[in-house]
Image (cartoon, rainbow, N blue to C red):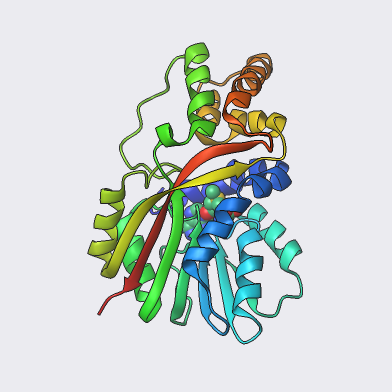
Length: 278
Ligand SMILES: C[S@@+](CC[C@H](N)C(=O)[O-])C[C@H]1O[C@@H](n2cnc3c(N)ncnc32)[C@H](O)[C@@H]1O
């Protein structure tokens, strides 16, 4: 395997189908972070936007509404199941093009005003090359605005289930620093260096508080057991159905201490902003 093939297979065969199974809950829990991204990206009427890793198209729909009928959103993803859900959602939207493409290398045949992404840019095998390509896909002065997860200890919705899972199953194999995955961009200095080497200017990576607006703590426990760091550990340890059920119950019991009455969980994201230099 080479390039992003490993992640492409993962998002088609493993993570995409899992996400679709919990699509409504996944979209609900990330809604506040979408609003934060859109506030910072500030898409304007008539602009052209590239969305990297559009997934099921929730953010795409809001971007398309903001740029209006004179603007356009090109939404790229490598996962067929995620794109199928996006196609259903966005059928009939004339200012959206959904493309099955690796954003690290695809030639979109145009220069964008804005590149935006909610949690879609942490999966590149060679992020320096990918961001150099994205830089070249912007018009001069064009903007980049993405959100990525801040470190685990600033994200108790993941850290708590992971600690419980480690207590039950033992720690997993150590991962190389910055390996492609949800936490690949948890170090602002590392992200800034990638963007600088890619040619970006006016770079900022800021940690910002966010909330996970889950529909219910049952959903959160379910999601923690199959996505993110705890989910990955359960897969690595080939946890059987009984162990998974036991851990879901333990996650559910631990999470209320971190929830407000609306089932909001504390989270922290990195807001990554830059402009095409030169
Ligand atoms: C964590 S999901 C986020 C999906 C969506 N942005 C959201 O917030 O609901 C990451 C998405 O990035 C996509 N992705 C991963 N690597 C990609 C690449 N090289 N090019 C385009 N999409 C990619 C995955 O298929 C997946 O849909």
